[in-house]
Length: 204
Image (tube, rainbow, N blue to C red; front, side):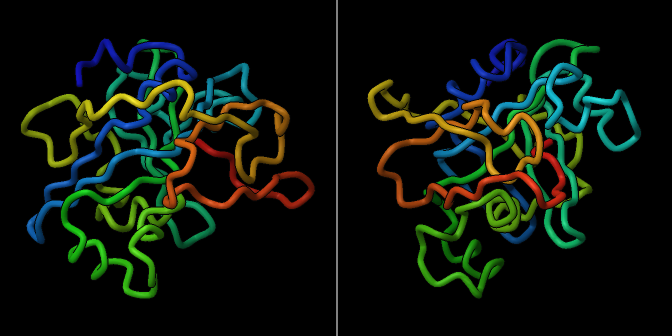
């Protein structure tokens, strides 16, 4: 995928990412997933975004350039994976929430041994990062480079009639925005958990 395809509004990028493939190539082997659920986050006009209050060491990758990986740690135990959007200086990203494994199932299972169903191995942002072996060291990886250990590839386009949208999961602000998109009927789509009163870390 080219950088220009990600240097757009995160809502457009989120829709475009459905059906695309994320490939992780590590010394242990290759895991490839087809993306089936994503969430869009804008920058300083989106109170659910990590960038709402400005640039920090943690969120610096979100300020560009587009096409890079933004990885953050949440709840003291999980990593979450995002694709950076827009142009330099304009923070935005798309959280990758779920995928269907299409290559490297055995390696994925070894990384998430407690998950019983294959369809659930990459269902949810923490599981998705886990099966791909993505950690903090991957933060800033260029997804558009052919020699990158983590690459974003065009997959099979998803028809509009197969796409659904709704509120983002677990955020405590801007809960009404329907900025989560998913492939209807995919067993890998995660369960919806409404945000609100409980203090949670925002999507990205």
